[in-house]
Amino acid sequence: MAHINAPYTTTAPTSPLAGLGNRILSALTAIAEANPRMREMERLSAKSDADLAKMGLKREDIVRHVLRDTLYI
Image 1 (spheres, helix red, strand yellow):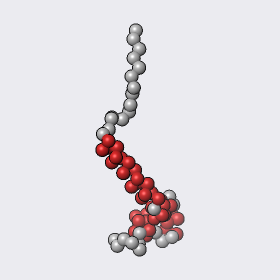
Image 2 (tube, rainbow, N blue to C red; image 1 turned 90 degrees about the horizontal axis):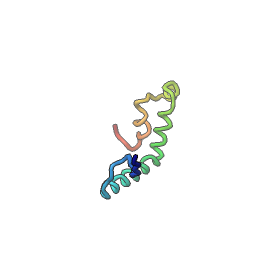
Image 3 (spheres, rainbow, N blue to C red; image 1 turned 180 degrees about the horizontal axis):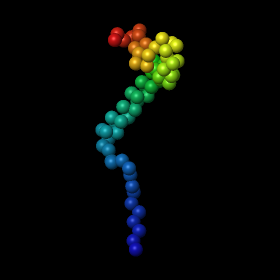
Image 4 (tube, helix red, strand yellow; image 1 turned 120 degrees about the vertical axis):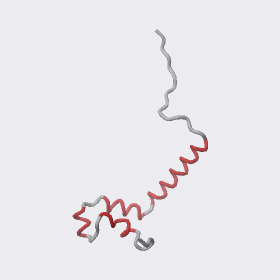
């Protein structure tokens, strides 16, 4: 009986260019998630529909509400 120990990876080997693309995407994601407006959208999204209604908001209007001074929709 033979035993073979071979390295096992769950991801395919990537090229250096793909690695660079992944790092750039991760950096852009981190920048977006650090934005206070994004945190406000997450905070409002976590509220119940009843709580949003008390604030005069509907779930589909959260983005419009948070970006009201920078985005014309």
